[in-house]
Length: 147
Ligand SMILES: *[C@@H]1O[C@H](CO)[C@@H](O)[C@H](O)[C@H]1NC(C)=O
Ligand SMILES: *[C@@H]1O[C@H](CO)[C@@H](O)[C@H](O)[C@H]1NC(C)=O
Ligand SMILES: *[C@@H]1O[C@H](CO)[C@@H](O)[C@H](O)[C@H]1NC(C)=O
Ligand SMILES: *[C@@H]1O[C@H](CO)[C@@H](O)[C@H](O)[C@H]1NC(C)=O
Image 1: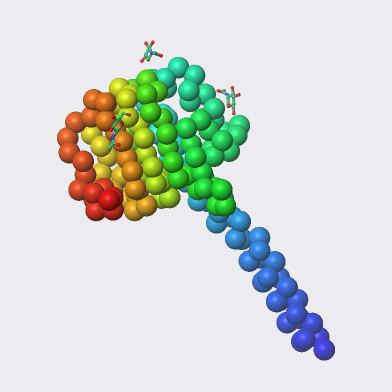
Image 2 (image 1 turned 135 degrees about the vertical axis):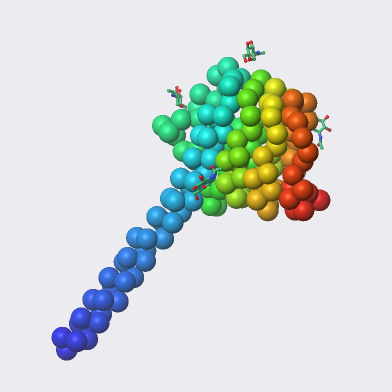
């Protein structure tokens, strides 16, 4: 009887720990996305006035201006910061927004090169970086996924 109870207890503990551990994995993914967005912000010289003031840790990054998340999983799927008077470089950290489908940064004053890390965005379907001061080529890897 004791053995049975011990096994049942072990089973319950395993069940509980798996229930407690699974949200942590989601939190980790969210932390990576938050960090990627904050690195993007910090690589900008100008934040287009007050546009990015909401980009701080007092609220979830899915509520930040220009950030659109998927409804069910809270993954960043769109980054819409067109004509926002942003200057500075495009941070390679955007390559960590693994679920990004749409990236619109057109009509800003962004300079430097398009980071090759954007080639890691396998779900990217549409990107508009026109009307900036970007140099160099579009990394080959990006084209591999877009149609
Ligand atoms: C754009 O940002 C620059 C600073 O980089 C600022 O001087 C200028 O007034 C801003 N323009 C607009 C329309 O907000
Ligand atoms: C942080 O974002 C909130 C909006 O979510 C805004 O009201 C607040 O002023 C921001 N704080 C700073 C320090 O920019
Ligand atoms: C991407 O995220 C990883 C953590 O998963 C981190 O170590 C790395 O520095 C991030 N890369 C960039 C370019 O932010
Ligand atoms: C990018 O945005 C500009 C300005 O809105 C537009 O003229 C252009 O057609 C867009 N490019 C693509 C590839 O959608």
